[in-house]
Length: 207
Ligand SMILES: Cc1cc2nc3c(=O)[nH]c(=O)nc-3n(C[C@H](O)[C@H](O)[C@H](O)COP(=O)(O)O)c2cc1C
Image (tube, rainbow, N blue to C red):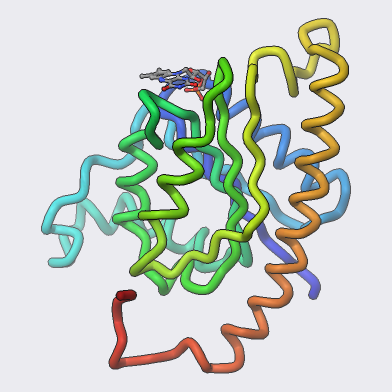
C-alpha cells in the first residue's frame, strides 16, 4: 500500500522529555527503514490542548482552531505509535485528554503501537491503562505487541557514549520489529475500513 502515514504521538507534557526523544527515534526508524512514507510527531509538550469542555460538542471556534489540524493529521494517518511516560503509575492527563478529543472519524479501526517510557523499572501501568480505557468510543485498535522502554535515560540517545550498549541495541531492534508489525496491521485494517463493515449510524459508541 503506497503512501502509508504513521503519526507518532509523544504523550509527555514535559519539554524536553524522554518520551519525545523516543518518539523522534521512532520517527527516524520508520522513515530510514521505509516502514512508511510519512511519520509526523504529534507532541503534547507544554500542553497544547486545554482540558476537554462542552464547547467541543457545540462547535466552539476555540476548539475548531485547536483541533482541526490535529483531526486532519489523524484522519490522514493509517496508524499510530502512542509514546507514554509513566507518571505516578499513570498515563499523563494530557494524553488521556487527547483521547477525549479524538473520535472514530479520525482514529477508528486504525492500529496503534503502545510504547511506554520509564526512567526506572516502571512502564507497565500506562500500557494497562491505555489498553483499558482510551479506545472505546474512538475505536483505536491497539495491537497486541507493545514496547516498555525502561531506564530510558541510558538508551536510544544519539550519542553512543550515553547509552548502555547492550540495552540500547536490544530496544532499537525490538522497536523496529514492532514497527514492522504495526505497518502490516495498517495495511490489513485499511481493508477492514474500506469493507464498510465498520460503518454504522446505530452503534455510535462502543459498549
Ligand atoms: C510527575 C511525574 C511522575 C512520575 N512517576 C513515575 C512513575 O510512577 N513510575 C516511573 O517509572 N517513573 C515515573 N516518573 C519518571 C519518568 O519515568 C521520567 O520522567 C521519564 O523521563 C519519562 O517521562 P518524560 O517522558 O516526561 O521524560 C515520573 C515523572 C514525573 C514528571
